[in-house]
Image (cartoon, rainbow, N blue to C red):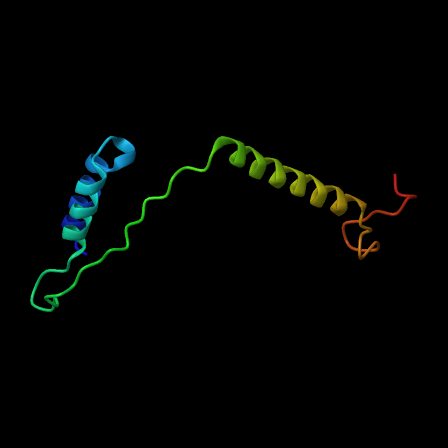
Length: 99
């Protein structure tokens, strides 16, 4: 993809994306047109239907996922603090008699 094609693609997405108020059907049709290769090496029957719109996850589910991630992170941090140092005489440890 040339820089000009990439700029045109990004401009189209920026102006027509359904999350920004664009029409979903026009967006899918425009993406299919932009993604169809052109030029001498392009096959004639190339079509792509890989655009899928996914609905947002409901707020309670997002809160539950965030809560689970937080609990797991805190549990992992707590277990890391409780585990003994595998090499107590390593270069970073100091003896107790050091000032």
